[in-house]
Image 1: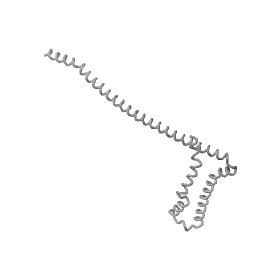
Image 2: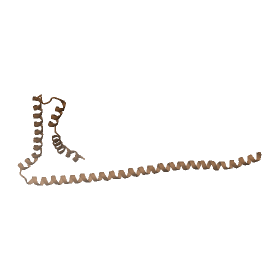
Image 3: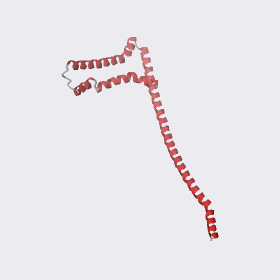
Image 4: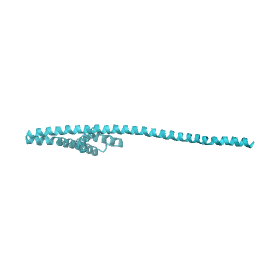
Length: 167
């Protein structure tokens, strides 16, 4: 009986390295599979990031081309104006230089005068504004969307081109 148990034990012990190798291989394969999944996910993320980065680079290049084209057109227009002004009389040159600022001053003064008049009108007639809703209605009249759009256009015209020129 002892010989049978020892033979059986020896037989089982002879399979023990193979059994350990099986579990080790299974563990290695599981680890390799996890690494392969991680590598694939990282490759996909890198590819997406690479394509996104490439798209962003192309977008930046397109913007640069657009800015350069705009600058070239502006320079061409300025050169054209310089050639015309060289042949023009001095009063025409001075008048041309004052047109845009004069129009801006007139529009701003008009907006200020209208707002001051409306505010004075409401101030001198206290019965007109009886609650907050009335006040908001008149404030919307004084500072209307159209008025703010004109003011925004003026500010954008005079100061917006400066930031574009500095880029």
